[in-house]
Length: 214
Image (cartoon, rainbow, N blue to C red; front, side):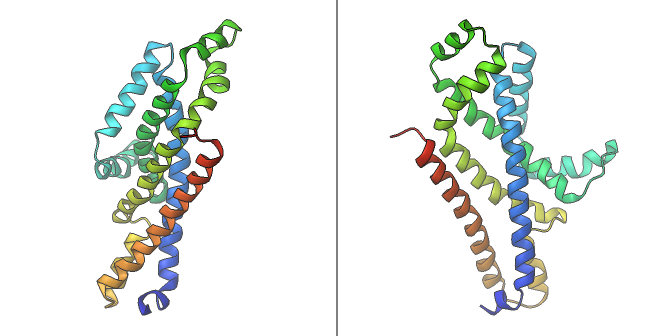
């Protein structure tokens, strides 16, 4: 218990860093994931190809490699940002590929007749997708999106290796101060447990309210 009480501010900064990474990266992942899912079902071939390449490349790229590509590659093109922003970009883009596939699977559960009926009323593809298809698909994709965002929260631990303040990175100064590495990791694990349980609780509420009855 001394590890926590005597280093509460250090744990607090790490915990807050993990929460911020999770929230911002989740928002980016949801926005990009829904956009890429729309691309993958779009009637325009070039958009479908772009969405397919996006998903294929990111799903098959190790997250650590993606961090290196973002952290070291983007500054070479003149884009210099705080490391935390780079971490959000890497986490958000990587997770968006999995969000995209979850949303696309949900879109495929919507009967084709729904879209045909909307088009027969003169609605455009954007209107059909936004007003008819996605609201119905949302009900079926709540659980997989929740699981994906929980994985994102745990993946944020990689950011600590790139000078980003987050929970796992607190073990280094604690180790230098001579604290037990076991108890240091126990409290780190407790912090991640709080974050993941919070996400799980949020999506449980969403599923009870809007999910498809089973």
